Length: 383
Image 1 (cartoon, rainbow, N blue to C red):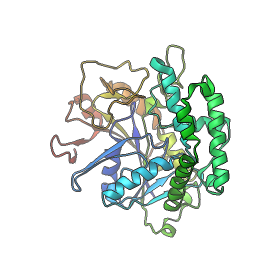
Image 2: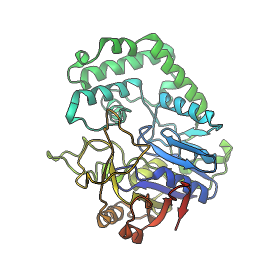
Image 3: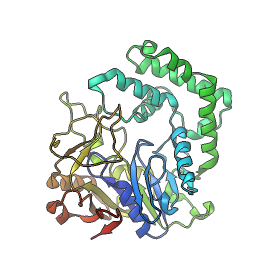
Image 4: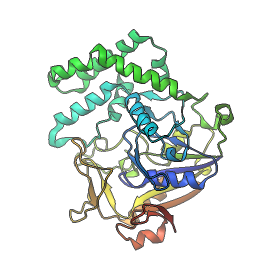
């Protein structure tokens, strides 16, 4: 089995979706494996042949080419976002095929709700979360009660409702600074209403019926032919970037790395965890993606920030939780050192440069394989 890992080399938004689709075109009989995080990813693909530009959240970036998506055991499943994006793709004439590992955790509406409430409470000290509740899902499963997607599917409606209400009550009491006093009563009534709960359960049931379950969390053990697939390449599509991993994220003034980082492994180690036992770093071609400059969308240390740098970015638009995307200068020497530190043992290591048409970077060109956009047609080119 050939394995290609797509890894963000910086703070995210490097062009991982573009490279994933490129590899799906290039490699034999691919399938895309979503690894760390969940639907907070916003991976943009601009498919000129189909005339489609799509930002992928809950589906792999090979979907426009008909490449199936596998949700690995480390990926968080969000029925609300899955159904929403599935409907968007169906309107484009696509019928995406999805499969999931048995161990995937479930995101509840309360994870997103409490995440957004916390960011509002923090005001100018907000963490810069995108509001999809990734941290809160991890905290709930760690400190309250683990809830796998498969476990939720075995509950009847009344048990599902009970699990949702109990999770919300715990999160209000133990995650919000002022408990229920922090919440708008109208919003709380809506969150706990029969209509809201039944709608979420309906989305869940539709997703459960739509996503085929694999026989193991260990992808090396899967007989893909049993699922009607002939797979020769696993393209592991990581989310975010190395500088958002807790191991690499710069510490704040108090020495804390957690606040502005992610609760998942964004590098090669995370890709291997998603694949499970049976594969090692020596089986993986590790592709580290970087724009010709740096970006950061969300709060957090950004020592490279340069207020004079301005680029159009149709994907990373302003939102109440992350604010506006910022730009900065790329230190290629530091980039190379990050890649070296993360890629130990990989079969092959590539640094892939994107957005070179926006800012020429000769130093980056010298150390990279270029996969960039042509200025007007938005087609891919590789040099």
